[in-house]
Length: 318
Image (cartoon, rainbow, N blue to C red; front, side, top):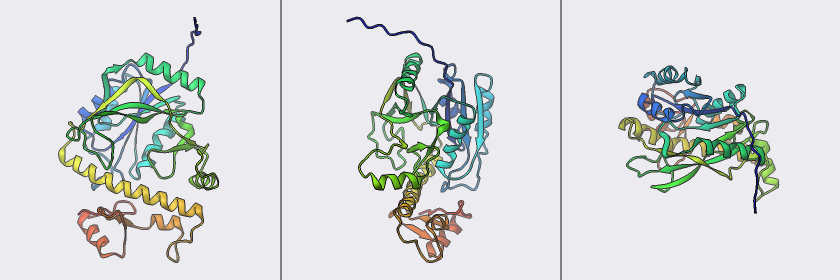
């Protein structure tokens, strides 16, 4: 049987994006170099995450300026700064992409690079264009990434198996129309829907797929990703692993507050709403994941140890 497919041309504005903090120059260059010539632009954000143990809100090593200098004549470069929650810092690149009418936004972590054995960009982009045209509800797509040994890539609370390919939701279609949702850096929904609306719908339709969330289903072949943390300072890597555990506690906690609010649970201690309680100064005990309040002696001990509060929270250091 002979099947003839018509030739088509699609004009898509394609950017990569990512975030960093005190990123080594050689790491950001490795992450970006293999994309040059295959993208229209890139968006990179600098700034410390909540809970990351540092007294500097923004990088002092000039990595963002170095990246702009290296790439501004090769593609459209956009840099920004934000210090705070991970999902808020990541949301900024979605919003910036929307303002610049980006059609496809591909998330890149600074420790990643394109696998030289899987760098067929023509096939990669043809697949994305085909999916965008034929499956308009699929707004988040998977890309293959290789998880190396723990020696090369220390896990930050992740439970991925090592030395194997893993699907990772990295490709955003129409990024300006989506947002991170449910207080997680790996869930997305329509930009005009609130977490409260998502949860209310889910309570009424338990076990069903929420139509306002973007659930990745399809893996795009053509370009695959390798990664390692060999270029990172060992002490910095230790801080990143500590932050990863605390951030996981924080995201779980904030998701819980959204759930109980939507479920109509009674408010927390007198004088607080759930929103006020979420913003009340606190941190998390690492072994148990339990929230620790300002009036707990541990809070003041850790505040002294870290020398400063981290936003509305502070960091446990033992």
